[in-house]
Image (cartoon, rainbow, N blue to C red; front, side, top):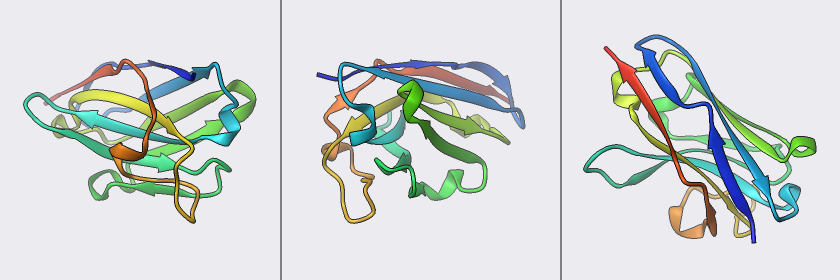
Amino acid sequence: QVQLVESGGGLVQAGGSLSLSCTASGGTFSRYAMGWFRQAPGKERDFVAAISWSGDNTYYEDSVKGRFTISRDDAKNTMYLHMNSLKPEDTAIYYCAATKSFGLLGLTVSTYDYDYWGQGIQVTVSS
């Protein structure tokens, strides 16, 4: 059983930066593909970014490409999401997730493929 804990959320002005961390325990972190998802009020949980179990491949939702960077440090059992040029529409609860179910690139973008989820952390971008 893998436990995931997000940290680093908060309030930031539009155009600012924020970094999220997701620390895992209870499993072999390096064997899991990891992802970030977000859920705004009244909306479904949407894919943001994913990183393969090896760290070699990443994938981003179109609206965050060039602004967000996903990375992982297996020695620290931690995944990161560095967010730049934040916009009010980035406001949401952000969730990290882990899975051993992934495709040829070693990652997946589907919420249904992820087995373990963090509790979520609020990111608020003010205009």
